[in-house]
Length: 148
Image 1 (cartoon, rainbow, N blue to C red):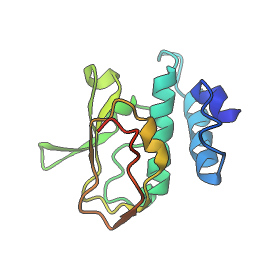
Image 2 (cartoon, rainbow, N blue to C red; image 1 turned 60 degrees about the horizontal axis):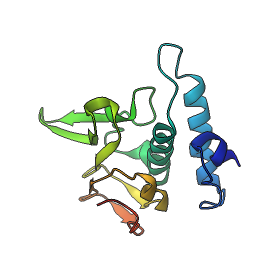
Image 3 (spheres, rainbow, N blue to C red; image 1 turned 30 degrees about the vertical axis):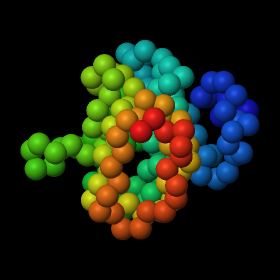
């Protein structure tokens, strides 16, 4: 019910609530309440992307990452990135419609990621490129539902 309420639709049947979901969802609820009057309300797609990437941050040891990449900030999800060596981007490195669309590229190489890739990454329906190379110990399966 909670996932359905905040993400829209009937996602609750796909993902039984586990502590990892609750932690990401609690952040999403806090984030949404702090989004501010100057910003338009988050769409269902924006909520899903923020939830999934927050879940990835939590599940892949984000607090210990070499670069936190501005994840879980008030910025639009398409601005969750850092530039390294002046030209290389890490984090959400491309979106449809520039910096206000849907996530198409997620670049997390060489960032000390540890843990299991959450299956919910399959909810990033516009994702076309995912880079996870040169990290510590990543486990899990990339879901076949991913648009890669």
